[in-house]
Length: 124
Image 1: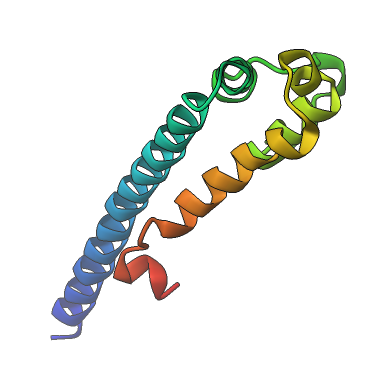
Image 2: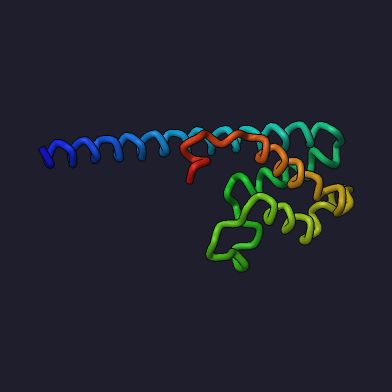
């Protein structure tokens, strides 16, 4: 009797973990799609935006470090990576002011905030 209860509890726990894992992957994909579509929209507003967005894509999304010597031990988020591009002069070289370039990570964050989190992940 106790053995069946333990088996049942194990199956339920495993099913819950599997559902959470699937939803976590789905959430990551939706978040990535939202961020990329906002970057694409943002890049279409001007040539300078397009050039900065392409630099962002190459250096922040393609995994090529901006400066391998100053690469941190921990991953850099999209906002921090965009900030690095602004501080290293990429924004100025594309013809954007720093405040205008900062609208890209702000827009991407708003898009990420709008992605709904599935119920089991909200509970954690």
